[in-house]
Image (cartoon, rainbow, N blue to C red; front, side, top):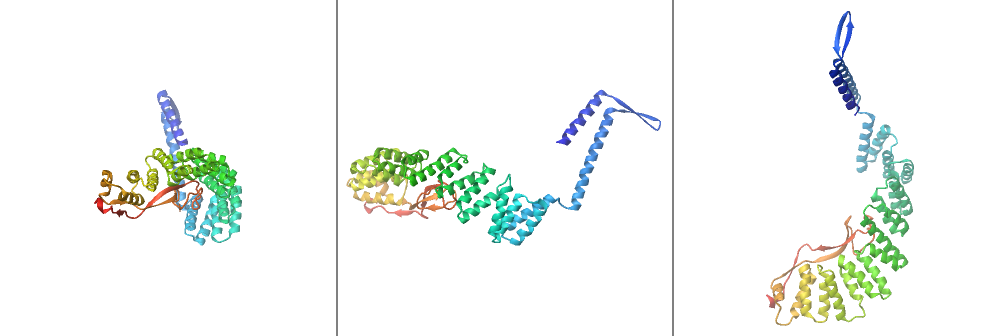
Length: 422
């Protein structure tokens, strides 16, 4: 930038003197020479740039013969120390760190690597002491605080872990990952007030609502508080577990209609068999006919889902309403070709009275190409699978990341139709 400004100044002076057309008289050994001003300025500029070039060239030559500067040597040693740390080569890490420390001094990354070296050597107390010292003196990094949090989690000292993560967030308030880790630790240890303090560090409003809903849900479980369950449901109505929890709280007080509304709201967003069953149970004092009417309502709430049609068909089979059950199973099968839907479809088809409906002949005149599935809860971050929904993933410590997914078998199953339909 300085060189560019210097060039502009010279250009301006030379141009001005050229248009001004002034001259300078020089007397040398009795000779008088008249020179234009712009010629003198041009010669001076050339002399300045020649001097700068010579200085630059001199530094390059000296650098070449004397080797790389100390800073570059330090960075190279630091990089080699990192590589050795990944390979768990203790002696190499120690040697490279000694060099890096010589050239770079006590910078945070060097101290952090020294602490990691102590951990590799099994000297836990020395490592912890180094991390404490580092966290107290570092201003713009958080190596020490984060390392202390990891040690605390490893040792089960969750209070120390939260304190260390607090130190990280003071230095790096935009480090959302540390806030998520703090939230998960706080939830696991029932420190809900602490968990709520970290929610503000999350950037996405939808994620803040989701995490806040989980915190309220856990608090409602601990204190058996219906109002907390209601707040959790309002923040995240798409979560099946929160919906069922709030519905159960309403059912305890015989608020059947409100419980049905809660379940229907979630069923519309994310239909599931548990929600369908709970919706029907809300009318426990009703007859089977009335319960079937409730099931029909859910087919309208989530018409793209197979669940309500299949559930309604099962009740119709119990009442020997085979014709209606067959039609609902056809709808369910058209949406998802699961083996259990196909099996019930074939069983009901065998019970149909003459004349067989055209739709039955069309479906059952060929083999039913179906798939066998297993439903599991899967963490969207790390892929951890569980048999039930969890607020916090035990593997990656992320909050509210489990989703209900299906695992299809390796190959599809051929289910033959009854012989009379072939």
